Amino acid sequence: MKKIGTFLIGSALIAGAMFLVPQQGIYDLNCVNASGLGTALKDTDSATITITSTDEADKKTVSYYATPKLVVTGRDIDGESVKAGDTFKMTIHLKNESTSTKLRNIELKLSTEENQIVTTSGSDSIYIDSLDKEDACDVTVEMKAREDLEQKNYTVNVNYNYEDNSKNSFEGSGNITVPVVQEARLGISEIKLSKSELSVDGKTSLSLKVNNMGLDTIRNATVEFSGDTIQEVSYYAGTIEAGASSAVDMTITPDKVGDDDIHIKVDFEDASGNVSTFEDSVALVVDEAKPEETAEVEQPKNMSTAILGGAAVAVIALIAIIATIVKKVNLKKYE
Image (cartoon, rainbow, N blue to C red; front, side, top):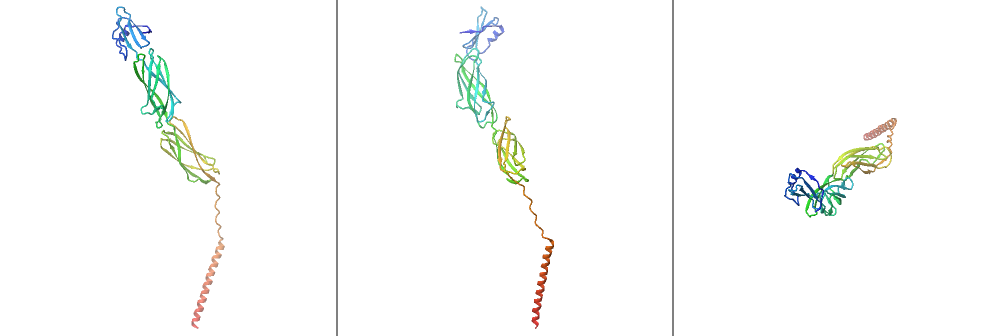
């Protein structure tokens, strides 16, 4: 057995070493003389710490096993976050913190609480042949985040098993955080114009619905209406929850003749503050202002009077004729 690192320790430390309980491996119940000084020796192969008394009269020793420790020191992923439904590569950083023992037959198992993030290969196990003492290594694995995940940080559990040179088995675990974001998705529906064709001096009402089609809340949604033939106007829709809609109803005032579409632009933010834009349009025709209708021509008053007077004379003449005829008829009766 090769021994390195000799040093002297006080009697109190020697006495304390007598009560160390090994997790696994060698443990010698022989006690060191508390009144003597000792030498601590570290075994580079078996990680056995041996404390030997320097008192020639009492060379009793106590030994205990120093457990080799594998740790996860961090991780790297593509970008700062992972979109729900996306596949990404994650690099896990590992280190053997033991100063004396080489680790062998290392097996890593990756898991999440409800399989929110899984490996694309279908196997959750990763194998490493060996890792030398105080050495580090990186393991890269391809993973996928489930499409329906809420936007937040998810924990990937890393459980591992490994052996030392003496084939003693050990296990441990670590955690990795993966931030998952939902892609903000927005749409516009039920676009309606009260008038799709109007004169330049008229007005029309434009209504529509802004729909949050994603699984995350949309914030600071602003709808802008513009075009060559209309006065620009905007509407602040604010926050729209996942699956919800915001109704918009605006008055559109034309100021130029033409058939340019009304351009609809919606700017909005996702939970991370990233700004996105959705655009649509609706047709509008603006004509020249219509001329005023011509008023009806009034008949002169003297003409109306003449017509009425003539009608009255005709009636009187007719009455006189009828009276004359009646008189003649009566006279014939008495002849």
